Image 1 (cartoon, one colour):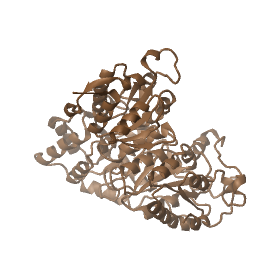
Image 2 (spheres, helix red, strand yellow):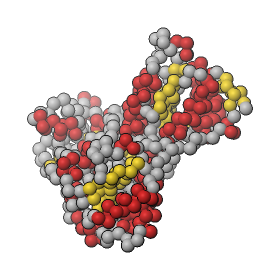
Image 3 (cartoon, one colour):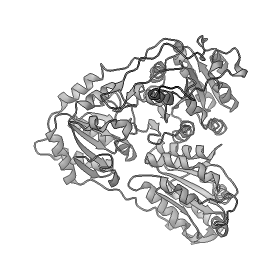
Image 4 (cartoon, one colour):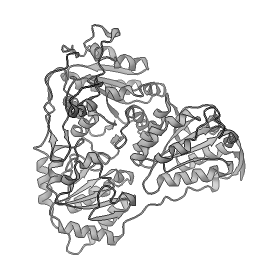
Length: 597
């Protein structure tokens, strides 16, 4: 046993638990922990410009590779409250991040001391555990429990609040005999697998809905193996995108009322058995449940028992880790007497739809139509790129038109969808994938939230490409206002007095100038024929300078993206030819491209 400060024990535990990538801001109440990190030297740290941004960086780092747990650090009071959106985003998508806050001394916690807030009570609804540690001797056990909880069952975030005096109190601790606790994860039995296989044997048109739980379980290879063994088509959810390559013969396409492909919805509507693995039946996926459920049976496999029957009661439900369930299904299918029906004809029908039901992307108009941007991104970045996005028409259109081929190569804040998540999350992803191409996708409004994070990338040399599709609108909100017959408080356009004479001056914020001012490279594209060249140059700049590179694409002001209320009621909008009166109509070629070099 060795006598040390509680925070010195914390640093040793972080290292042994494998959580050595931290993001945050020092401050008076958390400085003891920072002193322990400096003394130990085994914990890496990225200095953020906003604590919410730090929490999203930790989230992105967690999502970037199996086993990662990003750590967010902040001082007392506002630092903890700033973390709440990050905790919510992580909890909603089943991501384990660890948030550690400093706190006022124990003796003044009920005396309205400066920056003293009951952060544990505030964070409790969006964490698996939120605790203020009042006794230094409990610190090792609390962290040990926290890591077990984060990894057990449905993964999720934890917040640990450490009063400054608790941090500095000396305790007896032996890191050599400290051992991480084993996570608890339910596993499907062979009998449960056989019941699912019985339902498959009775079906004619089965389809697998592959959710993010498969990615959390690092089980994409087993999903593809099971699909190939049975010839059952697979439709990934938004959170499961990449579990099967988009160009695999059994990839049936994403289903949904917003993020979807036409052939995915068409094939789903022909199915008679739906096998959901590691998914939530999210409302943007299902749309109207009457349409979604009509004429088909459902199996639901999820690691969290309370998810079974939460949205609707399946015909058969199993509480199981996705990987364990796939192991049981594979074993059962291989040993099954008489085998399973031949679904190759049905799979062929789904494959055939992939060659016929697409949306137009090859637009040549100026201003640029957004569909063309995603066409060029597919060509420019290829199969190995990792996309990061959160919410908005940019994300919805991207999910309809981009292609993803590997797990953890589409990283998205799926349920919470907080504006501003994309940039800091991309920094975390890039930290977790050094040397790989990371591309963030934002609308102009998402990009303007937490834009100060670009300086983090510049300071710490964290390279990624940020594609900003700029229509100077809150596009998704504008489109949803159509039902109220209004276009109200959703335009971001204004004449920028510092950009007089520029073709994009009427679009308001000069994102290129802002990005350059924050230490990054940036360029603007106004001609659809130059998008591909702009993306190529951006990648070169990123590789050369090892900083974020912003590619701002000036879009037409109004484009309605295909979506609806039910899988059979998707509005396939034509892009509008006209633009609002306050939008510029004559756009010049990409004059700033050469300057960016």
